[in-house]
Image 1 (cartoon, one colour):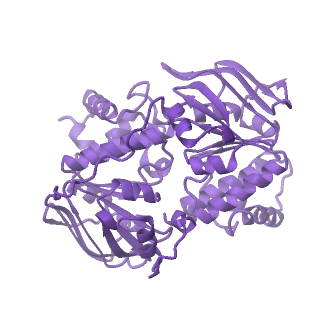
Image 2 (image 1 turned 45 degrees about the horizontal axis):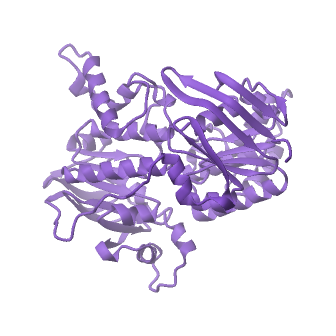
Image 3 (image 1 turned 120 degrees about the vertical axis):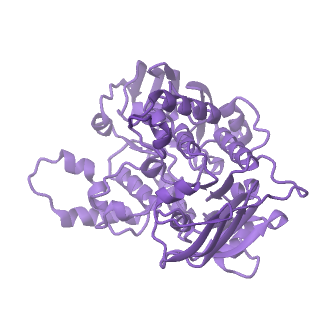
Amino acid sequence: MSTPILEISGVSKSFGAIKALTGIDFSLAPGEVHALCGENGAGKSTLMNIIAGVLQPDEGDIRISGERAVIANPAAAQRLGIALVHQEIALCPDATVAENIFMPAINTRRAPLMNFRTLQAEAQKVMDLLAPIPVRTKVGDLSISNQQLVEIAKALTLDCRVLILDEPTAALTEPEAQRLFAIVRELRSRGISIIYISHRMAEIFSLCDRVTVFRDGRYVATDEIAATSPDEIVRKMVGREIAQLYPDKLAADEAPGQPLLKVSNLSDGSRCFDVGLELRAGEILGIGGLIGSGRSEMAQTLCGLRPSASGDVEIDGKPVRISAYADAVKAGLVYLSEDRKGSGVFLDMSIAANVSALDLGKLTGKLGLLDRRAETAQATELAKRLGVRMAGVGAAVSTLSGGNQQKVAIAKQLSVGPRVMIMDEPTRGIDVGAKAEIHRLLRDLARRGVGIVVISSEMPELIGLCDRVLVVREGRVAGELVADELSEEAIIMLASGVSNSQNTKQQAQNVA
C-alpha cells in the first residue's frame, strides 16, 4: 500500500469543557475520494479546520506524504497543497467573483499592479467548469447556490494535492451538483486526493472509495464503500437505530383546528404573484417547487422582509398589516432563513444573546437594562429543549457545529412565542439524527397549536413531514397536494407545468 498523502494520528482538540476530538486517527491515500460521516457535533469540521490550519490540535501528529507537518495557519496549508471548501460561505461580498477566486494569489503577490483583464479571463475559465457565472459580478449579488460554486472554483485554482469538500452540494441544484461530481472524478483521475463530507448517502456511494465514521468526537470505523451499506453507516453514525425519521402526521380522523394564517392576493410585483394560502392549527404545511420558483421570496414578502405591492394577511382571524419584519414578529409570525450564517445567527455573539435577539423588551427591566439572569434562563431552557450540544449558553455560536447553530436559530424564533413559524430549509446540512429530532420538534409544536410552514428542497421531507404541500411555479401557487396525493411525481408535474407522468427520478432530484 502506498504512503498516505495525509495521515492523522491521535489528534485531540477541546473548546473549554467540550472535547471536540479525542484521539482521532484518519488516513487519505493518493488519488482517493474518502467520505467522512458523522452527526453534527461529531468532530468532522473541527478535524478539517485542523488540517486546513484554521485550528491547532491539542495533541497528535499530522503527516503529509510521510513527513511530519505543523500547519500553523491556512497559508501554510495552502503551501502544503491543502485546500478547504467550507460548508459555510466565506467570501468577500463586495469583491467580484474573479477577485474572490484569486484572493489567495492577490494576497501573496508582490508586484504593485494587477492585470485585471488576465485575472478575469483566467477566473472565467475556472468558473465555466461549474456554471456560466460572469466573473465581474459582485459576490453579494449572487444566490447562495452560486456563491457555493464560487467557493469551489476558488479551491480549484490552488495547486492542491488534498481537497476538502464540506457539504459541497447543500446549496446546489441537481445540474450544478452533477457538474461538481464530474469535476471530483476528474480530479481523482489526476491523482488529487479528496475528503468528502456529506450526509447524502447517494453521493457517498456514487463518488467515494472509502468512508470513515466519527461519533461524539471519536473515531468509529473505516470501511471500503463496496463492503458497507447506507444503513450500516447510519447505525455507526448515531450509535442506534433511527426507527422513524418522520413523526406521525395528522390521522385521517384527526381534523386540523381553526385557521391560524390566511393570505390572499399577496404580490411583490416581481417574484411572487397573487399568492393565497391557509394554515390551520395542528398541521404542517409544506412549500415546494423548482429552484428560482419564488418560494423563499414569497415567504419573505409575507414576513415584511421584502416589500409587498398588494395582499391581505390574517393571523388568528384578525387582519394584520406587515410593512417590516418587526411587524411580523409583533403579530406572532417568524421566519427562519435558509442562510444560517448570513441571516440565521450572530456567530460572534453568545448563545444566550442570539436566543433573546428577536425581543429584548421582555427581558428589559424598569431602568432599561437587560436582565442577564432572565436571558440566561430563557436560553438554557430552549437549548435544553432542542438538545443543543454546547459548553454553556455563554459560549459563542461560532464554537458550535453547523447543526447546533441551526438549533440556536430555531430557539431564537421560539423565544417570542410565535403563532406561526415559517421554516426555510430547516434541516439543510444537518445529519440524519438531528433531522429526526427537528422533525419531531416541528410536529410537537404543531400539536401544541403553533402553525408550521416548511419550505424544503428535499421532496422526501415534504412528503414525509407535511400534511399538505403547496407547489410554487414562477411565483404563483400551482396547486395543492394532500394525503395520498403526495408523491414525487405529483410534485414535479405541478412544479414543471407538465400534464403527463413521463418524469424520471433524475427530474425528481431537480425539485428544490
